[in-house]
Image (cartoon, rainbow, N blue to C red; front, side, top):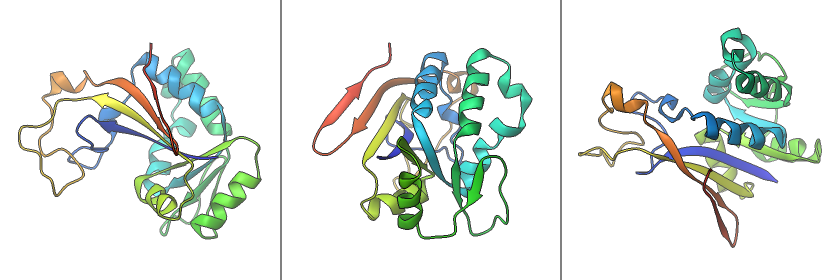
Length: 188
């Protein structure tokens, strides 16, 4: 099964006004949930920006300071990854650059494992959705105040939260969408 997982704010955004998704960093309980989700994967297809964001799990020893972080890093680094990029000439760790179409790479990743495969990066996942390749969409719904003047022409918030409030993002629900049913899982 091909899975697309994403964090989304209550007002439907996946990134902040600077294009970052750092706002959605999980609390300890949500991090444990993600560890278990990632543990079930046999492969991961990634866009360049997500690959570069997640590469720190391979390279930054400070991300192994807690038992949970070390566990996630070990699991993440072991997963075979395919990176879609028009600009990268090489990739690190257990990754390779995509050499075929999205449909062909998805098929190859699914054929290479008896586990689920995930796809990440909004642009890449959108292509897979348009091609009808995504079997399941998993959304972590993060509680976050809606800005007073949202900009409908952007895919991000028009105003950042004050510094004190930015640490108060937490997950209120994990939503799994499959045809024809919707499953809701609330942490805790």
